Amino acid sequence: MKNIFITVAVLISNFLVVPTSLGAPPEQLFSASATITTGQSSAVLTEVPEGTTLIVTQFCKSDVMGADLIGSVLGRVPSQQNSNCTTYIPGVVFDGAQSISCVSIFGPAFQDIACLINGVIQ
Image: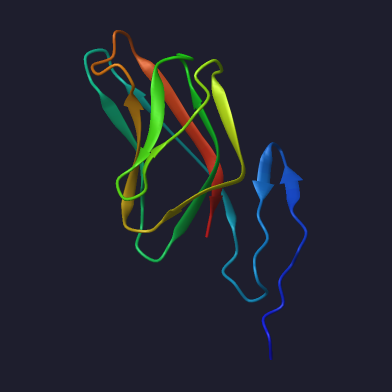
C-alpha cells in the first residue's frame, strides 16, 4: 500500500498547518519566547527533542533591526530586518536534537530584545 498524502494546508490563526501523511504523528501548534537581555548576545527559545520536528512558520522580535533566528544544527535563518515579524511559508524545518535561539545581529544587545517563534511541532 502506498502512502497517501493529504494535500490540503489549513490556515489557523496565522499558523500554516503543513500537510502530513496519514498515520503520521499529530501536529500541534507551538510557540516559544525568550529575551536577549542588555549586554547578552543570545537567548535560547527552545530545545527540539530527539525524534521531533519543529516547523517554524513565524519569527518575531521587538527590535526590527536587532535579532535573527539560529538553530544549533541548521544555522542562521534569514529574517526581514525592516519588520518585527517574518513569516516562513511553508516553514523552516528544525529536526530534533538541536536548540533554537534568538541572536543579536550586532553582538551584545544595546537593549532588551524580546523574541517569539510560532509553528507546528510533530
